[in-house]
Length: 425
Image 1 (cartoon, rainbow, N blue to C red):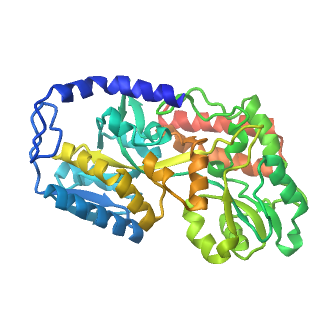
Image 2: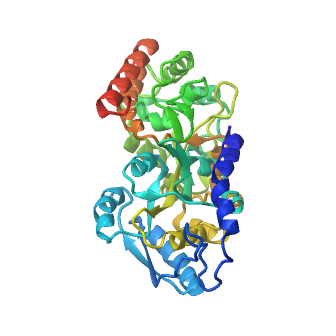
Image 3: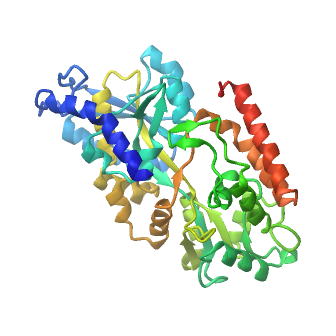
């Protein structure tokens, strides 16, 4: 499906690429491909980008944009704003001419961003598209009003898998059955010791239990969802729920387990395995040192496990007066060299395929392996109506309630939420 989607993207973008090919030769001084009229875009004195408010990320972007300034003679102004606040601020600042040329967002917000008209589609050439891993390209692709476009230049990619303590477990579990065995044979709840822990009410981390048996959130294709087709209570989902439920009960994972409890016990050396993502690496390494290991999610249903993949991307503001140059800057920041530098400083995985394959650290390299089996978290606005009912359903399952009843009630609540939000016509 991923290869078919890439071919579809190339076909959709073909007309734009032909127009660029027929345009006048690129102005060596300008450096940009030009606007839709075929004229070279005038070089601006300055480009403004909104950078997420994390110290390491800011440092990395400062270094990279300095190289762009030296190469193109354009000043790049960094304005620090929390990634979670940027969308609302852009809706206010953009129309007044006070917004950025580029802003930084997770891909699962694209549906809302596009619906509000905040981002400009970006035209990338065949060569540029091929710089990024397939899943990243899928994640930033979205269909709105029948038009399929790319709305972001991928900058960060992440998923999750199994961290394990080598002092307690010599090897990571290869199958979900292995993980259950580790839990059952290496747990002493009275001493807060567990072979494995996971949160009982977190769809993000626990969806693989269901996905590998045929459950799905929305039908259709990535970025072009059928929100009236929800596969959270089908036969596969029920089978996955039964597997998920087997990890709870007397002597197994307590149903009150929280993320803070998991992190605390794991770093204290009382838990053999936990589920988490690359953001946990610094803290876990500091606590466990050389005993820290990581492996892709154990196989479920005799297949590699499909985990959610998140992609953060640079998006060109609809209100920017320098759209082509903004796109050029985003492409520059996400090339192989600069993605490698960003990873070294910020510690976030690069979606640039070559930069990702260059990573030698065994923990991060294992994340790259898991990404190959992942799929983008849905970017439809209606996804916001899924989380709470399904998180509640997972809690009920952990507490021993009937899987079929629980999932059917959760599905009904999701559909009600979507209808109430105006998402389903």
